[in-house]
Image (cartoon, rainbow, N blue to C red; front, side, top):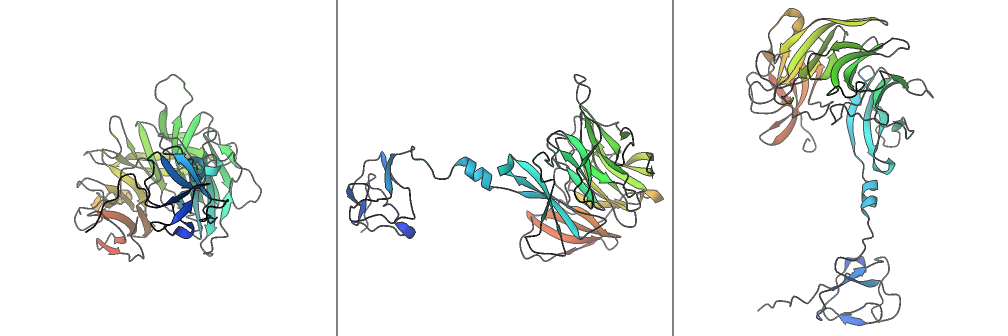
Length: 401
């Protein structure tokens, strides 16, 4: 028949190497021998301070246990030590002109939470050759546009465009030219995010949040073109008729531009409008024409992630069926929006976009789109063929996230 320990009995201190003491075995507490199984006072606990030293079980000096009342012992691991040891990575970008190079952001808790930019060549799989850009502490690759941030940088053809959280400025840097400092572009008093560099490399289109007019109500959100060459003048405002704009993107020729917008009181997961424009750009001039809505203007729909494939067809994600499913349209030919699936499915190919820069859909060839989606609580990765309307699921060595 078993027995129950009295509540005043306590588990034995742990011996070195993780071995528990046996009942009746003596242990040293700094001058007094005690036995496991002997009643203890409930206000006393034993804290092993130096686990690398073996306690003297014969009552001699050099014991490694200390007495402390409950709730008062000091942990050897501080909250600051835990925070400084943690870091995270995200915001992965592949240079569209040089797909061998991948970039990412790494948070640095030990550097006051600074976000550092790193890159690697995919020709080398070792972990030792990652390159850190903008190593000076004054560079913090983050943005506060829409307060939640995201989309703080992009790279095209070795040209980096980024937002510096330290001063809110927009900067550009030629990563191929060693020793150069980033050069500020854009305007003082404005925040920038969600960058897309034009194929001509002279302009970047992005979201601008204008804080220059103090006391004039909410800051104004606009879609703007910012010159990357010296002396290109002020930002060109391309669209400012909605309360919010997001996710500008170019086709491969640089002749088409797409983005989405929404207005108060809606959130972007409730209703957005997909917009499209023709682009006219030189080193000195950037303008758009034929700017108009493509989807979401005639029915309440949440639309995300506009992306052009190599043939110029525009792909996006919309929730007109009740789930975020993929669609496509060739705006140049006046076509109607078509489902990229044979029929709507009860799966979400996107999630609520609290931040800029989300990516769950990416064209990889004409009519073929890499996707990740959630179906019945399971995340999946596959390649969607817009002509056959089928998804080829990818076998992965681990569960996708």
